[in-house]
Length: 192
Image (cartoon, rainbow, N blue to C red; front, side, top):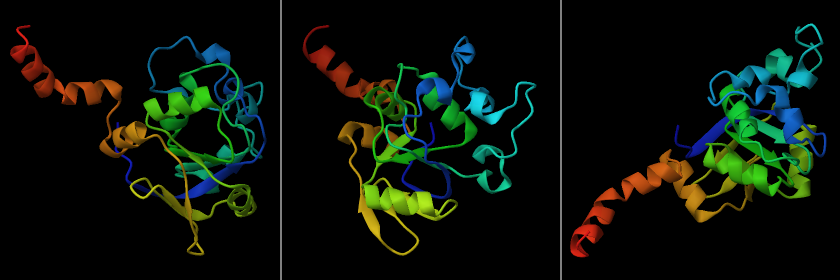
């Protein structure tokens, strides 16, 4: 997993509220156990016509969305079922952060465990981002601040352990593996 320290990118804006995990990655794509390739299925029912051709008016199909790593989403993003494939698809597409006023708890947990940074901002900041699609912003995970082009900096909350893992590009298992010398010392000292 690629560490996140500072993420600078233009934004892609999808301001609809209550975008659920079935919209993010439809259930028919849940048969795979690998993350690779799921980016093509991201928002599939919104993004493609019935014949599989891209809908030109969908935000991810526009040229200005190419290369953007920050998705600005509407309130209550990622609601619905627990579906680890949802953050997998977002990351495989190239997103590393989702910014919203509220992100569903289960989705947020799955995102943090899979290298996707959920950023919760106040309504005024969110409104500015929605009104300025394609704005270049910076997310500094070390200071836990989002910087807007006008210089404003907005703090966002994040769990300490999740922040540590994202900063170091590790998941929970990677963290535990990093503790192996201490575990082995403990076991040796206690006759195991």
